[in-house]
Image (cartoon, rainbow, N blue to C red; front, top):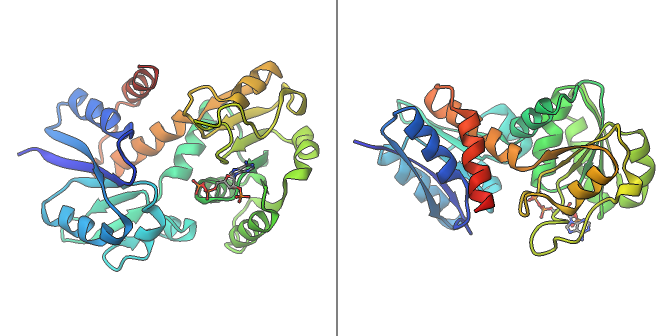
Length: 280
Ligand code: ATR
């Protein structure tokens, strides 16, 4: 009988995860299928327990469920997910235990490693202080980066930096308001945009323009709708290296696949599938 995997979220209609995982399952000859399910936060516990009862192979959780999942009694978060405060991957154990992981930060880290970024000691500016910034900053601090979180609402940046620093990780973290961005970018090695600037329908907005960027910078925009954001175009104009946010989606998915199956997924095929779906 086919093993069912899924992603829960709301809205969920445009998720790229089914195409990505189904391509991987079929390339590996695995008798598995991955579906998207619309689940509201108040029904999340029932949905997860139902999936477990029906023998699902594993789940992804997306907006707006990642933080809610951490509060549920039925899931035991792994220490990193607990620190991040959000779960995006659910693993069903053989004896009924349900474990929650967060692979978003690892996805971002792998996207940067692909671009040959040396994370330890590198000066990284993270724009935004929401859930995505939290997962990414946590992972990069574990790996020893020197991070400044910069956010429109300065207090949120300061609070997030304080919270992550409190976990005594090797990387240095501070938080500040947007006015410092220009000065910080001059000294930075990497800029990561986690704000919604540039995301459809606000495609002409950007956290920084070419004049504020420089050729030694790597610019990573986690927004992938559109595939090439205004920030990435500005980065190219400045001669900076660019990293597409879609790689974070693919690598977080690949990591989830490993957690569920203990099998190495066909990452290149997953990339091809996602890029084709986005260009269609
Ligand atoms: P997520 O959890 O998905 O990362 P979020 O919590 O909604 O997202 O956060 C979105 C981020 O985009 C926030 O950092 C937000 O800044 P504020 O904390 O000041 O709200 C940032 N953001 C959204 N619109 C913005 C804009 N027009 N200019 C600058 N930053 C913006």
